[in-house]
Length: 382
Image 1 (cartoon, rainbow, N blue to C red):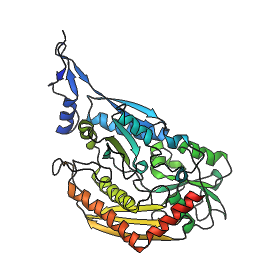
Image 2: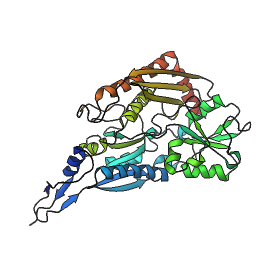
Image 3: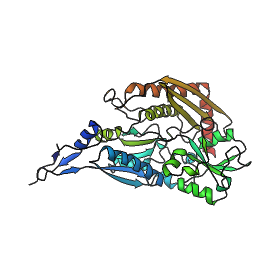
Image 4: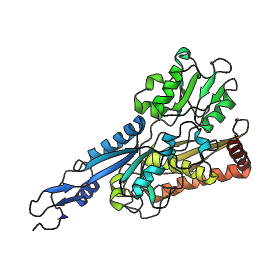
């Protein structure tokens, strides 16, 4: 008769760090007769798009390097946002356009973790879920890709009434204000689809995309212009990847926690806190810019009317120490703006959260609420 499986005590090579070693050991079981380790398969959920797969593959590759004894299985699925392609994102009225189906799979224990673009994750997650890792950020900026006949141009030098495609109210509002000679029109689809529409149709002179997505796809050669914050501030969390897990699954939280990039984490906590305090989302134009320099975390945030005519922006900063992982030992405190980072000291996280709250409160006190309310109403009416 076969004995029940027991925790395996074999020495395991698990990459750098005792945490990886202990974690892999905790997921290793052996049959007492055969004394053969049997590894748990970690199931990773993702969207089906090529970009989503590239992003997920990069996270899984890092995890494999850290935990070479574990196996990983990638499970791809379509989300609401992938299926509804004839309506602007801001019109659909669904907060979890690109996450809901993946969270259902998490809830049903069909996957153990999900890799998202952090900007797709709401600042308040459904009960039972948390962001267990915020990975090192790629460029957060927006990029302009031009129709082949306009290569070499910039937004400023495009002809009068040129049509620029973007699915983002945030981009359209800022760029209408900056480049009033241009017209902005919604364009939907994954990166491949949008580039195809740009190249094959004569409808758009250029389209605006996240620079990080183009970089990850290996399409840097298509970037004709990078939009810096003075031209177009970026979306909350843009350029960063978030790994969502079940909040009570301590094994998986421990597994992915080593992926936290401290600087990206603190910047994104401040950005998400700002957005949450404003009660913003994809249905209103809200944008940010963050930086850490000389122990200071700087947050610039703004809100715009739909046409960009009205805007309110400001900048605040707070003293912050960018921590080294495990510096203060594990933390058992609850998540902040949907993020759990027990292996990062708590004080800098709280300072980042308070910075976002303070800046949002400042703008609200100056009248930002009216701009946002009108923008939301106009967006719903059209």
